[in-house]
Length: 143
Image (cartoon, rainbow, N blue to C red):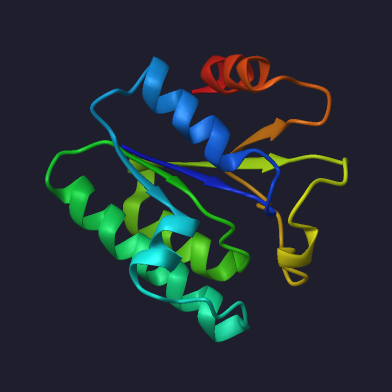
C-alpha cells in the first residue's frame, strides 16, 4: 500500500508520516519531498520543478510498491491531475491523505499557490487544533 500525504508546506505531512511509520508501519519505506529535493538537487519551486519532484517520488513509490513494500510519501504535490493519474494507476493500492490547517505556519514562502485539494477518494485530516498524536489518531481511524 502507498500512503500519500499531501497538502501545503508546514501543515504536518512529514510529522504525521514519521509518526505513522514509527507507530504502525515500521517496515514501510519513507519518501519525503525535502529528501527528494536534496537527493536530486532540485531546489526549483516553479511548476516544472514541482512536477519533476512529484514524478520522482511517484516512480520510487511505485517501484517499491511493486516490490511488495508499504510506502509512506509526504509531499506537497500541488497538481491534482498528477495525483489523480497516479491514483488511477494504483487503484486500491493507494490512500491519498490530505493534510491541511487554517493556521499560518512557518515556511509559508514555499506555499504552492496553484495547489488544488483532492476532490474525491481521499482522507481529510485537519491539523488546525490537533497535536500530532491527535492527528495520527484521526488518520488511523480512517484507514
